[in-house]
Amino acid sequence: MRLEALSVTPEQFAPLIEELRFRYHKWDAYVGGVLRVLPCALVLSGAEHSDAVDTCVRLHGAFERAGRQLSREPAWMDRLGIPRAVQQIIGAEKPCPYGIVRYDLIPTASGWMVPEVNEDAPGGFNESIASGPLFGAYLNGYAIAGDFGQSFLDALPPGRRAGLVYATGYAEDLQHVLILADLLQACGVKPILGSPGHLTCGPLGRPRLHGEPVDWIFRFFPGEWYGYLDNLRAWCRTAARIPIVNPLSRLLRQTKGLFALWREHPLVEEGDTQLLNRYTPHTEFFRKDRVDAYLGQRESWALKKLFGRMGDTVTLGRLCTPEQWEKSVAEAAKAPEIWLAQHAFSPSPVIGGARRLFPALGVYLINGAFAGYYSRADELGLTTHEAYYVVTAIETP
Image 1 (cartoon, rainbow, N blue to C red):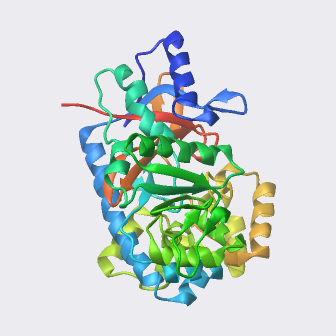
Image 2 (cartoon, one colour):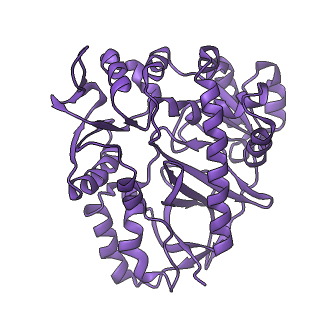
């Protein structure tokens, strides 16, 4: 894996960014006044690409089997911090094969590491869909692997009216559903956008969003927030009647607590346990009796909440002063039931010219099959909303 400059001049790159922002709805191309799209490609060999996809497909199977076990045991869902209201929706869900997941593979000296799963409301659709049309001609002969947009359309549930629900207070969430709405309209499916709070469903009626009937729902709204909705009954009825993409049960795999739970209980067979332990860092529920160990081995630990996105609840000990780390550990000790301690690992950087960046190779699976990449890179080895988007390209024979 290496970082290579695109064959593009600054004068060519600027209009590409404008297209990305306005044709593909990536409004957050600039964060804090800094362009967060690199004029570079993260280049994988054919073998690296095959290994990344194979690793994610195998992990996905293991996570699916673990999720099925978890859904049968309310006590485990409580342990994972799944709100009781969300458990009601999960209990009402009809079996649903539809789903989008993104695994972020972090390269290390010993191979890939996967510190968490993005299966509740994974993002990056805009960049993945735009990568080929916008940047494909500037890849020095390398290829874009996968086609997220076509994979999404090929995997649609039946029906011609789709409800797209999202957190309406966040423009970055709207941009994700708008790019999918464009795809749906182009293939004759009517998208109906709204908040999860706009869903209604009577005892015998059809689910409706803003009063319009829907055949299935695409959900871009954090699962743990559903407990704050006033229309829980409508969501339970809807989950029992039509497909929801992604189902609320995917929250069982989104929670970082799963990484700790399978180390406490035999959720899956030995082969799956070995696979999960191979590719994920040791994780444990925060323990007050181990505070001294966390404090004394600061650079060996990371603290995370059960739920969080874009690194918003992650603290890496190696990036903290001792005083900052002590404060973070004390904060976690106040509510240990929602915090995890995870062994830190050393990510491997990629070098491109004067840049030294730490990549997160984002691999999409749609209904379990490879659908494309959404990769980012940063200077510190902690992927947040300020990370750079970088096109992923594959060497061609």
